[in-house]
Amino acid sequence: MGRVMSARLWYPQLDIYDATRRIAGLPAFWNTEAPPSQERLFIADFYLANPPLLHKTHMPSGVRKEFGTLKIKRPEKTFIRYPSAPILFQKMGEVQRQAFRTLTGKGLVDFPNLERGLATPSDTGIELFEQKFVPLFGSDEQQLAQFIANSFAGAHPDIASLRRSTGLRRISR
Image (cartoon, rainbow, N blue to C red; front, side, top):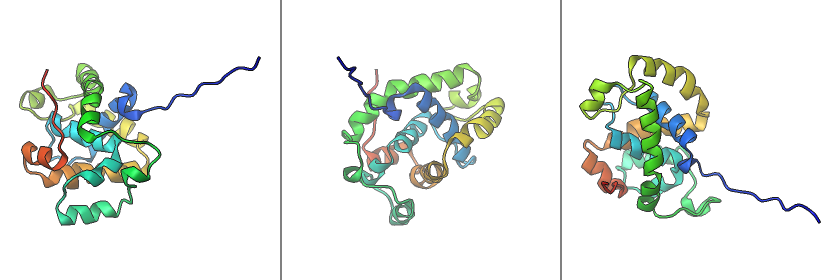
């Protein structure tokens, strides 16, 4: 009797190691004059893990034009069938929180800024994130991270505006 090989799809959105890689790398692309809140970082990470879903967000025309240059496939043209963005964002929540706690627990996130609501790397974190995590991003992913951090998330002056344009909001526990 032959062996049956089973296969499993890997979903980077739900992988703690990939979430840690993305969340550690994203701050290196952020405009340091306007560091993200933890929620803004998690929304940015959501779209870094699910770039086709950016097509379903609201963007100012200049940002939409810049997004078009990235040549991201529309969700219906990809191999994966995506659930609604809010449902997937909720599902990714615990993975993102666990990844962020790991980075924070290792002293890679600046505690005084975190108490002020900003998710910025510590002095040790900056060096590690730029030298060890950014090289793990391919060139397309680096361009996408740059766009998300500075154009997409940066186009919204407050978190409420970003929530409205994306439809993403976490249910408090």
